[in-house]
Amino acid sequence: MKKVLVVEDDEDTQKIYQQAFTQAGFQTIPAFDAESALPLALNQLPDLIVLDIMLPGKLNGFDVLEQIKKSEETAKIPVLVLTNLESEKKVAMDIGAADYFIKANTSINDVVERAKQLV
Amino acid sequence: MDGETNNSELEKKLEQLRPLFEKADTGVFDCCVDTSTSDPVLKEILEGIATILSAADKKLGALQDSEKMKEEFLALAAHQLRSPLSIMRWDMELLSNYEDHLPTEIIQKIEVLSKNNKKMINLVNDILTVSKINLDKIIHHIEAVDAKAVLEKILQELQSVIKAKELNIEFLAEENLPQVYVDLEKLQDVLMNLIENSIKFTPALGQIQVSASKRDESVLIEVSDSGIGIPKDELPNLTQKFFRATNAVEGQSSGTGLGLFIAKEYLTAWGGKLMVESPANEKFQEKIRIKDLPGTTVYVSLPIKGGDHK
Image (cartoon, rainbow over all chains, first blue to last red; front, side, top):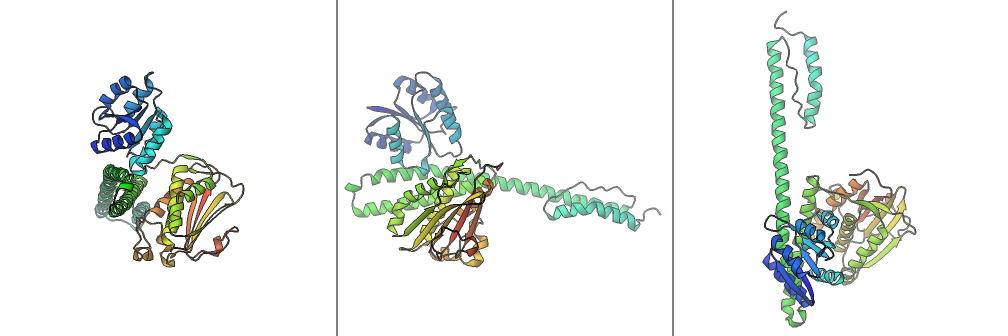
């Protein structure tokens, strides 16, 4: 079963990802902040990471993305950035995101479809 | 004579002040008034003018600051609204995935909720874009774009709506159209908005015509419809923020009145143009148009050379 690490601080949104990805045959691993996401990425080596940008704590999604792309073990894991922040697409793509979506403007079904393509 | 001013000194002072007055008339308050004179009365007048100009300048600065704060607050509020709206959207989409197991009444309710959720998201998106325009924070990524391909993709996406209203859509594009230099994502938004407008304001079984052709140093895109049109005297207001034509409001169609404002801002930044006619004006009539449609025609001209636009 393919594993997806979901880095998202909002509980309702976590539940949506969990339901949508489970239905599509993924196993989901939730992380509610950057600090817990990084060790999970290293230990679990997921097939895909879904990443929010605004996260509680000192590190944000860009920091997570940078760390993931820097570390040899995790560099190849595709990262889907999903946020409601605009104008940050170029930054995320330059760091190495596989794709970038504005949550409010994207269907959850399209997110799952894109995830399937990437793993 | 001490303390008395002759006419030539007065005239000289007035000559110095005139440019300041002209600037003040355009809303720029230059406070550098030369108050040196041997006449105490004239000195007081000059100092008074200096005080007024400086006070006006301060007021203007405060007003601009508060305007900027208002825009920034609006952008923040709109952004914060997106999170709950996206949660609602996604949960409703997940609910619709169970359609086969839900009673019809529930499915209908979900459809109403989804439609209204989409309206709110569109409004929030438009407000965010306008506040970014006002704060001068729009970044344009100019690249060579195939306008015909963009139009084809949009018409494909709108297929189901077009079918539902049984509209007759004709799409004509000249052979070998040159590429245009614009921001691809923003062009998609602009053209999508224009065609959606045509669909919205054209009654069922009506006609819409979309064409693309080369014209001088640009590609001209024309979107015509047989819809309700726009009253002639309202045409000049069309690209103003929040403006909606009276017949659009009376028809109770929804809309933010921001779409054309945004379109015009983008096109101007790329060195392009937006023109609206209702009914179609012969002056702009395109050689490849098949027939005149009685509703609204929007012309978008897109530059075929990359310039130094911001």
